[in-house]
Length: 280
Image (cartoon, rainbow, N blue to C red; front, side, top):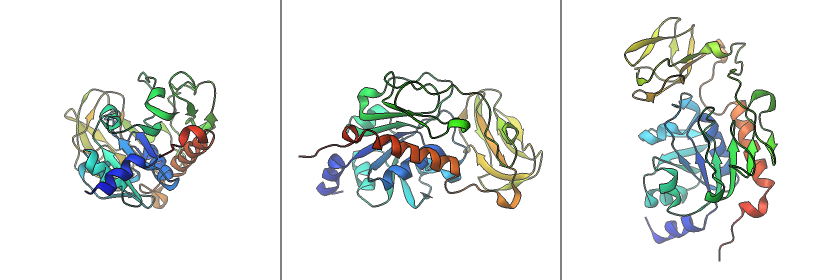
């Protein structure tokens, strides 16, 4: 590491993305393309299942590329600066948000965790511009701009008011909604030998949660599956089966991710003065 990389980190336009899911990763790709250096902060709740579309596995030093951008694990300032000094890289860190922001202030903070049931704190003083994605965000209360994620209004940018509450309905994929997911029914450790992209038959045991077998609801490819060893509370998604046969897809960025990522860039463009920083 040299002084040039450290200086570069202190002077670049820094965007911090909370979450490492496929939606958070699509946002990270879009912000990288918009000229920001992006650091992603991991949150263990809920477990990430669409790992073929996400930078999440970079936390475990797995090679990850999404949308032409490479994700690399970075544990401290020197590593973060080193990752962001290179082209088309995002830093994926196990640091907490507070630990990361202790290094320097963020220009953009995006909460892309899409947490439907947890209390969302006020992040507005933590960055020049804060963007909340999904339920439980109110402009002027806990974010500066909000983005709708519900299917009927996905990608709508709100400069006032609040986002709609989650309705518990899953977006249809190949004509199948909630039925393509398997949810945890208790707290426990998830264990599985399976990985994203594998084909499984109906009723095949894809893993065990708290020691209890979890079976595939129908034939198909694993579009999503929580990583082995994940701590999963009750009520979260563990498995997703893609019902589309030969059209199944479990890598890259899907249409919803792109839509929400582009909305995030539009939101920043609405507040150009706040999103820019002047370096002496």
